[in-house]
Length: 71
Image 1 (cartoon, rainbow, N blue to C red):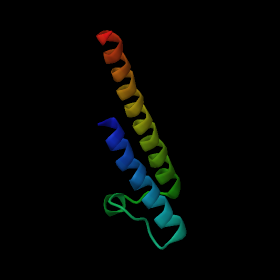
Image 2 (spheres, one colour):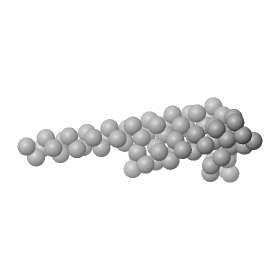
Image 3 (tube, helix red, strand yellow):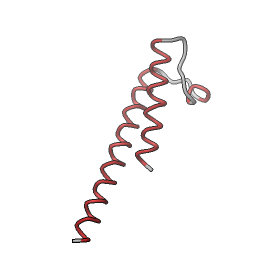
Image 4 (cartoon, helix red, strand yellow):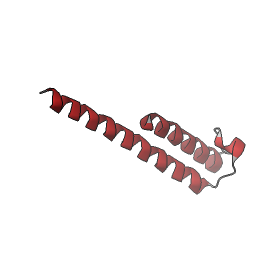
């Protein structure tokens, strides 16, 4: 679940940053509720990437533990 949420947050961060820096306004859902600076969208992308990596590492750790217990 962390990986999925991280992916969604990453998408929102990228869309907000690209829309705000290269076009006339931020894209995605967040601009409908908040007015964030471009640096905040970069931070959202980083937080989403961290969540995705954390979720993937937890999934791999769980698979290794399940594989070691089966032997």
